[in-house]
Image (cartoon, rainbow over all chains, first blue to last red; front, side, top):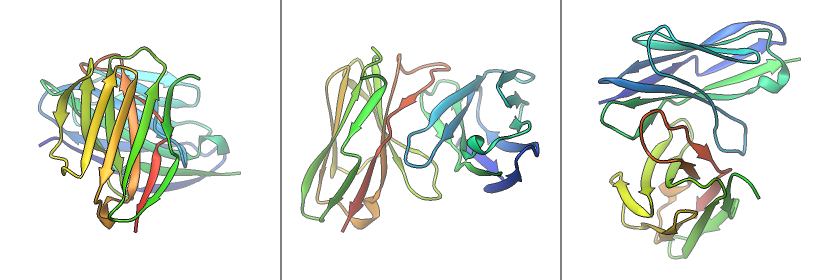
Length: 110
Length: 114
């Protein structure tokens, strides 16, 4: 059974304090790993797709990386508007279904 | 309107009521999904429709009944729900289900069952 574990569950950072969120996964044949951002009262918003180990993607202050067992979402010099819950999901080979983690709730303090 | 629109945003219903959730996507996508999001639990896939045909029913109780009249509209009909069904119900769409397809989500319907 595919599994996704995200850590930490919650993270509070000062504005400008860089850190990383972790997504560990167990899947038979990874087809894709996805990062989404979810603001309170809204649905998740797509950020990145990673397909193979070693791949990296960047968007503004966010950078996602992928190994064979985990993915990291690095946030550099975050701002208060980066506060949100970040969700990780995996798609296994031969399966269209995404398996989501429970998310990391990130709070950036001005 | 753009993106994925869900109505209503909030719904309170009794256990004997019948109600429907509506989803409309303006992205020209061929696949639509219903997800359930409960506190401290992962997003849970309920149903998948591809070109109006249901391709997945993730062991969802029969008190939830989906309907997809066309590729742009999706409904979730609710009847005799239980308090544990209280959750955020999210609709999503994608070009089609498959490899690396990213999902576009609506803002959800926050459902409370009394």
